[in-house]
Length: 131
Ligand SMILES: [Zn+2]
Image (tube, rainbow, N blue to C red; front, side, top):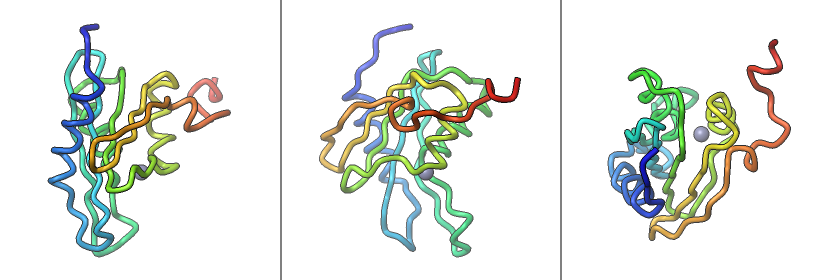
């Protein structure tokens, strides 16, 4: 796999955040997902007047990637106003594709902290439990 830059991935997530559709919460989120191919998939949260139909930025990025044939991921970056972490649903969706995925959690200034899916979702349920 080629070299990649954490700061660049965060910067791209900041750009994706500009496209967030969040008229209800006002909480805009941008995400970038780096595939093992080297491709980057972006996502933003997409809200709906029927609140349960809101989709998180992270899951938008995952769905875009998988629908384009990518299933292996190196890292995910998310950007929110205050550095909020991925919700539980997104943690489980990411877990489906690996525990080792690096997760960069950034605030609107671009400051970020680094963690992993395994750290965000310990003792998780996965495909291995279905064998
Ligand atoms: Zn989420």
